[in-house]
Image (cartoon, rainbow, N blue to C red; front, top):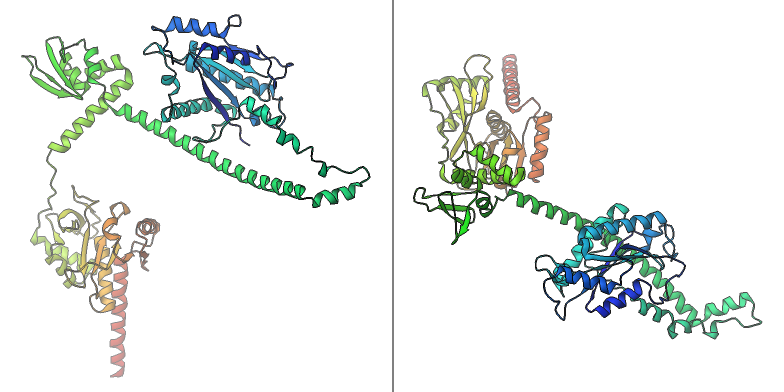
Length: 597
């Protein structure tokens, strides 16, 4: 089993309680379960003075006022680990332990006590004369802020506050022991701990000893071993014990599995808690420096709710400030603006000044907040750039139309159909301009394809195109007001046009229901939200590695999507192959007719 850290805290409200606790932990009285042959060790504290005297002196030297009548004078912390750590080979062998493991436990626990409580820890006693090594530490709970005794401030009072503080304390102690292979117990566990006197009472109680005095289970003088075994196996009490042992074994196995699951959950909780703490610290680093602290470092003094000095009268309200001095009458926001204003310096000088006063981390916090403020101001005040389509050149349309019909095999009537709807036209550079729109049919981009000269390979997006919110698309079939029931995704506008022509040619008519043909060259521009409710989605990307990879992403985003592959390099090549086969069939038909004649 996994070794667990153990930490408990008890209040000592009177000096009588302090003395009584010392009698047990310093072995000033007989302790029935202690081995007198073993020597205990004092890890922290004076050996010559009684604990009560040490606590009194600490209270007198560190507090301003006399303790309240109900004050906790001393807090006793019990520290240990489960037996699995001290004797991993056989945890049941009480009073034995691995010496090196014990020394590491004691040393680590002592360091933890000193780091957390310093000289408030007036004594720590390592007990080695009982079943498992453990430490009793005595803390005088002085609140540094009030310089008064306050067990509540250090360990929490009653109820939830105490539970939270104790839980954090157990987190801290378990973290200190973690390198020894000791883990924290399950947070929020309802497990209780039997007190020493209750244990001794249970051991010596009559019900326990009565089990062994049952004469009915004892062998008779003339009874053979075989007969005795057969007799007691039939005895009701023996069978009851067998059943109880079986039940106990079953429950122990269930408990063991439950503890394993609980420890795994606890480790996950601790990891999540660390992530939360990290995020909280990162969030703190993203906040600007408090302007009050900056004003103080600038040499201003606080007077009548204003910061005055160097000719300034500055009011600070959160992250904003305003200078009411007659010469200034100016406001601003953030640490950097305040430094620039008071020191009459530039941005770079203000950063250096903040670094000298608040360190590099402080300067970075201020710079981030300043940048965030500037960004917010720009977003809310700067006018948005408006996309404007390239000017149409009707004279050049003839050349673009020729390119689409003769070099790309798109039927002229289909090209004219898209041209009449304003989805494709020619610009001054003889480019085919494929208009991209959002789903409100508002143009917000364009894909350009060069058409001038024989081997023109130019293609790309017009500057300013919103690729994530604009697409080249058109619809065929159905009624204008009905929703699309099918969408075909292709890599480029020409591929989308080619696929639509192929469907029309093969079918011989428009699709019965509205079908949307879209150009999507990258899954990043996929309008997932708009397409997720369309039942029939065809992914008709190129059949190469890039097209297959993009198709897999789309089908993960749209589970209803199906992959379509063309036989050629792309759908435009497929369209050319279709025209070639059709032409060959027509030629063959003419030859067959000529032969008939």
